[in-house]
Image (cartoon, rainbow, N blue to C red; front, top):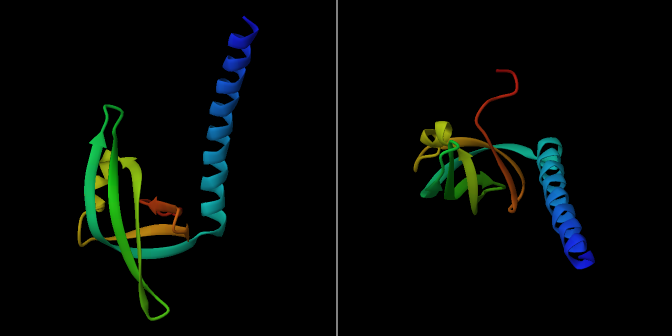
Length: 110
């Protein structure tokens, strides 16, 4: 019985810690990230769900210091905005590093 309670506490604590990690990550990208307009070189739709989200794999590029910077990753975006992430389109992103990118679909002043 004590093992089950301890395991439940660890699982619940891990869940809460992961949620806090996501909020901290988003805040760090918002405050320290650079605004960049990137070209969508490739995008593949991995899955979608009934909640209105689509998971994509992407390859983005932009010019930086005279060289082309390429970043690939996987992201879940609202299905409503999936038409803005098409091959050949330009998209606004917040870039902190290769593992911390955030798509910007609406400007803060809108």
